[in-house]
Length: 165
Image (cartoon, rainbow, N blue to C red; front, side, top):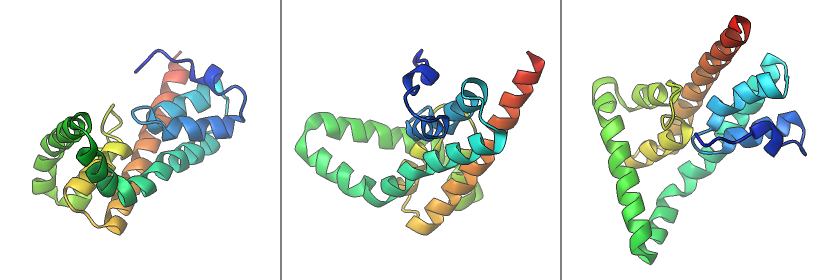
């Protein structure tokens, strides 16, 4: 991830809003928001978790509703957008399809989002749901389940590292 001082970037907003905003950012998502909330913002554990989950899920709602029409519209407007979406969708299909075949779409989507590694979060999960035709409600619930699990993993990891240091 870029070397960004998230606490300084969001110093003019409350720690809760800062946590929510960091969690909305692709790649950072709650994997970046929870450690910042706990270490830099000194939020209570439950508050850091809730604000990060809410912030991570806000874009998912809109991505699931509008990713297809926006991708189609942008792809029709320029070669650069067409290439970007071709790359993104091919990459997402490659990373997600084996799990989908083995475990079913819901479980594969949930586990894919739950793994707290870069580029396996809610944003990519929404792209995978779109690509594999997962209906909105099932996709939202699978992604929410994955985000909740990832939040627990990231919170416990952050607390463990804090205690070790």
